[in-house]
Image (cartoon, rainbow, N blue to C red; front, side, top):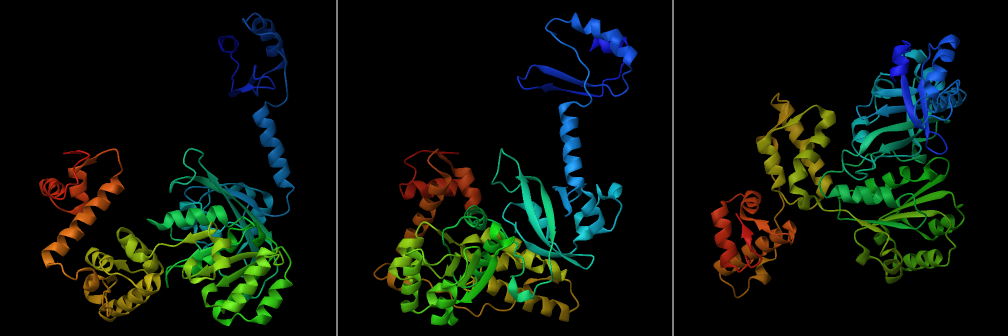
Amino acid sequence: MSIFSDYRINVRSGEIGGDSGDKVYLSAPDLLVAQYQSIEKSLHRVRGVRQVRRIELIPSERRHFELDTLLRHVTYPVLSVDRSGRIVAANQAAARAFGVSHSLVAGMSLQRFLPRLQLAELLRGITAPRYGFPVTVRGQEFAVDWSPIALAEAPGAVASLAGAVLTLQQRESLPSSEAPPPQVLWDLDRRRDSCLRLQQMAPLDEPLLICGERGAGKSTFLRAAYYLSPLADSGLLREYQGSDFSDSSLSEMLLLPCDTIVLLDDLDLVPESLQQALAEHLLQGKLRPRMVLSARSISALIVPFRQLLETQQIVLPPLRSMRPAVAGFAEKILGESGFTLDPAAAHALATRDWPSNFSGLQDCLQAAVAHSQGRGGRSVEVADLPASGVEETLPWTDWGRGLTLKEQMDKVERAILAEQLEVQGSAGHSTRDLARRLGISHTAVANKLRKYGLNEGGASS
């Protein structure tokens, strides 16, 4: 480098590589022929240098030039965005679709051109719609393929995306009934694991079962599986409801080609005779479409389906098992209304058991928003929340027979502490950490662990 400095030659960039990894490439765009001839002999005298020659482009410039040329000739829009949703690069077709100069596209927000796209959710994780979901750009209908750029160090973490690459294929306007609305999943708390499992299993060919209680999101996951499958690009879609499934539905299903995705909601509501026939056709390979099914639970299905789908199921957690995230889910539901959630109201929502899960939470918040609007507010407060109206179904009547109240409370308290210790793992536990989670003093925790004989592994303070 001192040789280039002595001859006042500006080296803009450099890289090491070549077929055998022993070449050094330096980019000096203003290098004159006379300057090159002057430094060539000096460079040969550098120890280890065996050959010096001049080339038009260093490898990275060549790759960039070839990729740029390739994209320039692609007739459909291709672009990339960073984690904040700003366009990093786009081809000429994308600029034409957006109606702006190609030189101005980079740096613009994608949301400006696709205002209804749930960009924040798409960029937050890798569980978002990926193939063939419909968008409208300046009156033209497109199907978008969204390819996340994940960081190799943490491919499943919330902050795992470096950005994404999008391609837009123009399509004819289709009736809204032919494809479900794009589903973006709320991947908070324990639901994140379900979302990641869906992202892994949706592109496969095997039948997929989604289980969960009423209102837990089975239908949402069912339709999200469609947009996470490559078949959404060009394949067919058929949707069936278990309560309406009949012999004619099965006959129609048997005629569908292999590039079809079949969404069958509430398989447990299909009559057992039809469940049996459907399972037999699947086992015999007579059903060619990709099957995505939902049910209350796998135990609600007939035995052949349990055997067939045991390893191909996703179980959605009920809302009551995700109390720390209830406020986050509520804020997402309120997002489009422009209302905020008061902290006291968020805590009140988290204490409810939600037997109807997200359906119940959504209904509750809609009623609360209407009440808040009636008093001219823009925030949902405790007074706006409707009364629960649901009696908690608890097992104490049978479980506590023969036990005093103190004995019942001791058994419950011991079970809670044992479960918390198991969650903390076998590497030892801290009474301070445990106390913080339970909301009591660490001295009280230590006394309770000693009382119930749970401190055998040793608790550190």
